[in-house]
Image 1 (cartoon, one colour):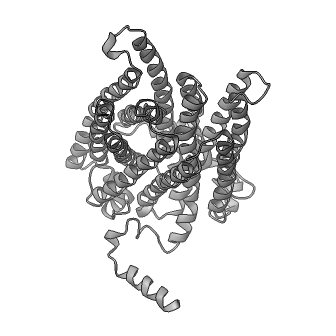
Image 2: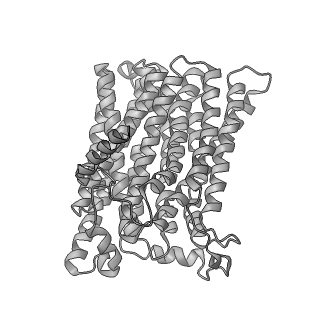
Image 3: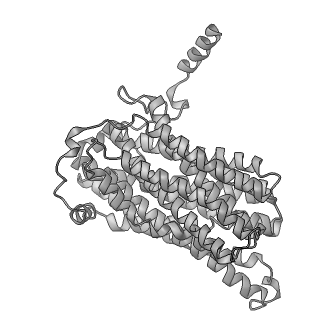
Length: 486
């Protein structure tokens, strides 16, 4: 067996690194095993995303008969916490701890919030299903609280976890490490969606409760392993707090060229890709008549498209491609994706719907990598948590608002159509869904308008010698050393 293992290891060593994404992301002080262990926090976040946005919204809308607008509001509740991501990132940058930790306390708080929300959720489902004597509003309130806690935990864990990853990585490999973490998020979504799809193939309320309980335990287990011995204790962090206030740090962060337009582009693009989040699986179930297991598996297909987008973006960054061009390419892919989803209904084709679902994940991944890389380049020295938190805050707030708006528009437009306000040809339930998808196409065109000057601005900066790399040599080194894993 040892000879066979040696031969297999030798075979892998002969494979060129360019065929192994993220193969060179490790360094002497940060091994690949430690990086993969740290990335388990992204796996737990991906599991929660699939459960909330994929499985739960389908079950609550179709099986439990909860109005789509109410489910949309529940899924969007975490947006209340989204603006706090920038503050959380800044506080983790400057946290004073007697134990000498900056990131670990916030990561553990986020983990407990995530676990608490998943622990409450089964009891809310029992009330919503009618298997209790309690009033219905308790089920709605309990579900809303569960969604809020899980969302707050995910925001905290993801913001501080990504900041910790950049702390551990060398300056010239920070971009690749963050991209690896994002890829692990999608991997967690793929695995979770497949597992949930198999577990819920023969659907029952009891089986769903068991899946949620297993997710709660899995979250605690994965995050505990991810945090173990990752951040070194530094006695100097128990000293005085940094004098710079959050307001001063925020003003400095926003003084960069094109900072506001960059955030506007992030918000528009995220809204365009997120508005369909709670509608994609109900669309497959109500309009295309797909079972629960199949629609949950489509979430895995969405994540597979995202993995493909990450691989393509890493190759483009290896060639020093402009991050905003990568984001624009993802936006164009999103246009094709939503057209395919719209035409899946008249063609009665689950295959076209699957292609559109894959393309949504593909385009969204390119957009995320492009905007995230641009945010990392613009980060002031020593403020990676603030930069990542600001990017995450805008993205989460835009996603939450878009999800809520998508559900409301589907119900309002769909209800008006079924009452014949748009004529007999549009009287079916598909009209509400189609309106939302067309609206997302409009938002994608607006995103392209916002990104255009940023691409031109960076080209002008490079010609004039004021590119970011000229201001910070470490950024030039980071750009020049991109590889397929970046």
